[in-house]
Image 1 (cartoon, rainbow, N blue to C red):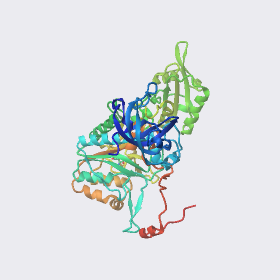
Image 2: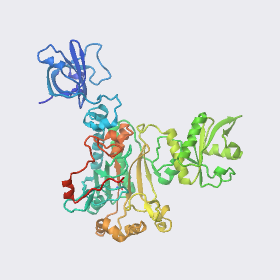
Image 3: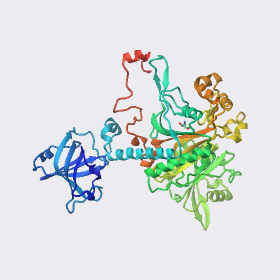
Image 4: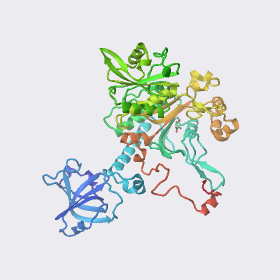
Length: 583
Ligand code: ASP
C-alpha cells in the first residue's frame, strides 16, 4: 500500500498511530536541529517533523518545496504552545521515521499559497500548479459536489441520463457555431453543439419522457467573466409536461445543489415574476432580488406636470436610495454622468428633507415642480427625510433599464452574498424587429407562443408573450427554457414569420419537422449553466475560477497553446487551404 492516510485528514484522534502519508512539500523550515515541513495532499496539510541526525533522515536537508514525498512516521500531539488552532491538523504532527523522495521539483514559478495574487496568464500556463492551491482545490471539489447533487435530484425525479453527439449539424441558439471539417467528406463540416436542443426534442418523440444530461455546449461568442466558449449545462426535457412541471423539476435540482454547496443556507420557495414586472420593478430581465430599491412608476403622478423633462414622456420612473440624502455633490454628479453614459437624457436627483415638520425635497429642479407634484413624488416613492431620490424619464424600456443599472451600482451586494433564486416567466416571444422588419426570436424558434396572445402574432408580434422562462440567481441569468412547439403547422407559421423559407427550414431542421409528423408529445424543457451556479456558490465573480482548464479572455489556452496551426498534410487531408490573415 502506497499510503495509509491522507495527511491532511489526520486529527488528534490519530495520536499514536503509525501512518504512511504522501504529498507535496508546501513549506519547509529548518530550525537548526530539526526540520519541519508541511506536507500537502488532497485532504489538506499536515506538519512533518524530521530529525536529520537519525539514520536515513539526513535527506531532510535536501528536500525542497513541491518535492513529492512518502513519509512513514507516528502521529503525535504537538508540544505545548505550538498547537495551531487555525489549522484542521494543528493539534498534531507526524514524527518521521523514514522519508522517500518520489519526485523532485524545480523551483515553482509562483507561490502556491492562497494569499499571493498571481497573474492569471501565469496561473493558466501552469494550471497544474495552480490547481494545487487551496482555492482551486476547494472550487473544483465544490463543483463535483454540485454535479453529484444535481444528478441525484434528477435521478430521484425519474429523469433518464442520455448523451447526445458532439459532431452534429447546426443547432440554433443565436450564437456562432464552432465547426469541424470532415475528412471523409471534404468541403463539409460538422457543427459542435450550441446545446442538445434538437436532440432532446427528438428524444421526446423517441419516448424518453424525462431526459437530462450534464451537457457540454460550445458557442463561438466573445468571452467575458461569466462566459466561456465551452460550458456545461444541466440540460433537461420533459414530455406531457407544462411550464409548472419544468419549473418544479428544475427548482428541486437547484435547491439540492444549493444544499450541497452551501449547507445551512435556506433557499426557501423560489418566487416567480413576469418579464414585464421584472422590467418595471428592477429594470432588468435578470433581477437581483436580494435587495429592495425597486423602481417606482411616477408617470401618472406627474401626468399634468409642466416641467419639460417629465412632460409628455413615455415613462417617468424613480428609485429611493434610503439614507443617501447626504451624498456629496460630486457623488450625485457622478450618478448623473453614469445615467448619461447609459443613454439617459438626464437624471433628476432630490434630497428628501424635513422642512418645518413637513417632508419636502431639495433639488436643482424643485422650483419647476408644483408643490403637489413634489409631494406626489415623495408619497409614491415612500421617501423619508434623509433619503436621496433619483428620477429618469423617457422611452419606457430604456428608462427602466437605466434606473435598473443605477440600482445595481448603488445597492448590489457581492455576488456570493445570500442565495436569491427567482423565475422570470412570460418572456416576449420576439426580442425586436430586425432590419428586414422580421421579428427576431427572444429564445429559439421552437418556443411556444403564449396561448392568449396567438391571435396577435401577425398583427402585433412584439406584444406576443412566449411560454419561455429564465432562472436567475443573485442577478445572474443561470439558464432558460420553454414549452416547445410540437405541432408542425404552428412551427411552420413561426418559421414563416421569422422569414425562414420552407426549403431553408427543411434543410436546417427537416429531421425535427419530420419527426413531429410521427406523433410528437407536448414537451417543455430547460437548461442552466453549471459553471455560473458553481461560481456563485463559490463566491467567485469569474467562472474561470471554477473551471479546471479555462480559456483566457482572448480565447486562448496558455497551457497547451490552443488554438494552433495545423500542418500542411492535415490540411490536404481535410481539403482545406488557409487564407493569409486579413489585414
Ligand atoms: N437549449 C436552450 C439553451 O441552451 C435551453 C432550452 O430551451 O432548453 O439555452
